[in-house]
Image (cartoon, rainbow, N blue to C red):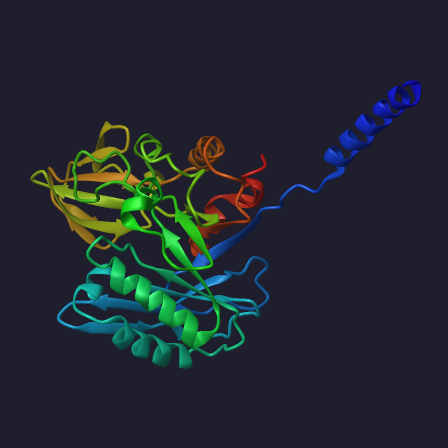
Length: 315
């Protein structure tokens, strides 16, 4: 009995030492490149890893917009395909697959191991979209990832789980863009918290995508009539009067960022600060496992946030 008693402390010490020395998960950080023209020099220190190569919309037929490459991306780039959801209401999966494969043949880099697909599927399009994902995997023999919205996690038993290798949780654009009562279309943590359910049982492993962009929503006669990309609070001039928070009244008809704004128009500045992102992470840590990767949307706006981005999960 004395020998057993003597060994027990040693076992406890060994166990604790193993626990303390066990390597923790290291989250990597990357960026989306989402322009129609790619011209990133290879001497850039923080290059985009996820590059949109095809933008497929549907308006009186399928339209495939191919990204033009002024420079060749570095090795390891993941091509991303954006697909307009209504397309699947009228187009069969194999028909779209042919167009996608043709588009992929035209991109100037070939040795990629993964393809990411961005599509906000619905109940009516799920069957064809999921079939398309299966066919894409079968024909390309690549790893396939797909973007996942918050509601598709909370209600996954209803919305379905895409047949892919892993998902990327898009943690932005979670409100109604056309609703004049929307507080912040890009990132509204109050709205987001309503969907913090079922992360523990969601079948796919999830990485995370966070926003780095800003825009101004134009409101005229209580209706959303347009938007301006890249507008931040710092751009507001003497032709605006603050109504509340991020809402401003146009006091004089004038051109602003190339848009004609009329007196009595309102603009809502939707932007995301580094503090907003930190609060986002604190909230997600309560429901979500540490992701292997965080992807920021988008690469061109990284200069507004600094190096803090690159350790935001572990701060």
